[in-house]
Length: 203
Image (cartoon, rainbow, N blue to C red; front, side, top):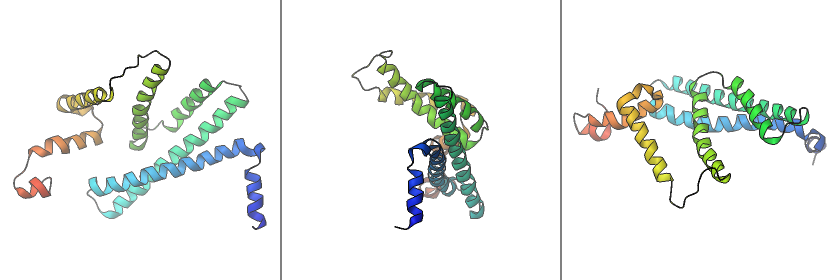
């Protein structure tokens, strides 16, 4: 092994540097994860739902991937940095340092209401709803039951979303509204076997 990799590995594995190197590694992981998730999503979305030249689709994929990677990488970097400051400078305890650091960074990093930020936040909302319910059960603040709750949860979600779509569809997020229109409205219309089976609509 050459000398350079040895020196680099020695530097990276020095315990005294672990704190700030973990912040840099968090930036790297946020960028990579954000790019991987958004690239795949944008490719599928551009193929299935964007009826425009491929040059524009490619620009869309690059723009969305860059935005997601930048936002997530920046959030992880700033969160880990601020949490470290709260831990070693202000001596905040574990629950509070995490919440306060994420609260502050989340406000500034996700302050723009765009499609990428909205999808990230709504994804987190769905996950923390379940997580918070489990936390309440863990603290014995919510009774545990042997009966399966997921079917009731699914029934409630579908009931609400179809009620909103049928009666107040303007309140739904545009991409969800578009999906619901394709599934439930467009399936009411056809003129021949072609737009019944092959295509959605014949213009």
